[in-house]
Length: 134
Image (cartoon, rainbow, N blue to C red; front, side, top):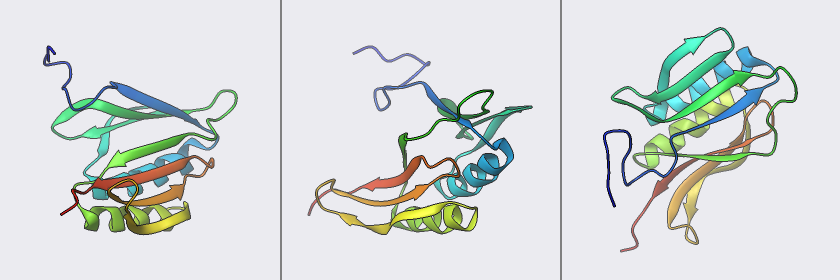
C-alpha cells in the first residue's frame, strides 16, 4: 500500500457530510459533542461548518445547511482516545440538544467502549474507543 501526505492507512475516507434542517442547532450540537474527542471547526462559511483535528484536516466531517431534505438515518461513529472521552462526548451531546440512544458502556461484541446519541435531525452519532481484549 502506498500512503501519501493526502491520507493514511488508518482511514479509508477523506470526508463525510450531512445536511441539517436547522444549521445553527446542528452546529451547536456537533461543536459541543465533538470537542471532547479533540475535533474542532477547522473551516466555516455561511451554512457550512467543517470539523477536523487541529493538527490534520482529513478525515473531516462537514455539517451543511439543507436546501432541501436534511440527512436522516445516518450512523456516524467518531473515534475517541479513551473511555473518558466517550463519557464526555455523551454528556456534551445530550446537554447540547442530542437524545441518548445508549449511554456509555463496553460492548463486547464490538470490543469497544461506545456511546450513541441522536443529533437534532435524528442521525445516530457514536463515539467509540476500541479496546483490546486482555
